[in-house]
Image (cartoon, rainbow, N blue to C red; front, side, top):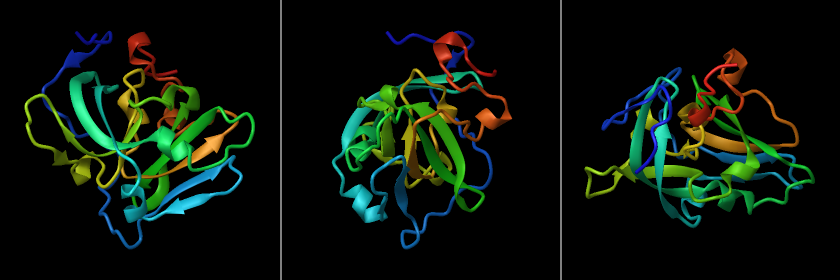
Length: 196
C-alpha cells in the first residue's frame, strides 16, 4: 500500500488549487520550448507535442495544502522523452518547468533536479483516470489543460506546473514561482519540506 506522508490526509477527489487566471487554450498560439543550457533550442506546436511517444503511469500526488491522492493513472509525454530531443551542455543538473500565469506563457515556474525526473513518473499529462473511473478523461482547464506536468510523488504537487509551456535546462538550481515566496527548494513530502 502507498505510504501517506506526514501531515497529509487521503482524498478521493482531485482538488483544484491554482494561482492566477485559468489559461484558455489557443492551439494557434500555444508553443512548448526547450531552452537554456542546450546546444540548440527547440520549439514545438501542440500537434508536434501530441505526436511524441506517450507513456501511461500511475502516480501518487501530494499537495502542500495537506491532501494526497493515490493511484492516479496519467497518460502523457515523459520529461525524459523531451530531454532526448535536445543535446544538453555539460553539467546540466536542474530544470525549470514553465507554465502560463495571468497570460504570460513563462510566468509560472518550478525548479527540480533533473536526475529525479528520468523515470515514467515525471510526465507532461493530458488525460487521466482514477480508481473510480473506467474511461479516460481529458484534464480540465482548471487542472492545467492542454498539458500539465505531474512530478514524481517524491515532490509536493506545486512542482507540477499547470498549462506547461517549456523546460529550461540549468547548471545551477534557481528558485521558481513558489520558491521565491519562501517555499522549499527540494519539496519532499516524506520529509515535510514545505517551507524554508
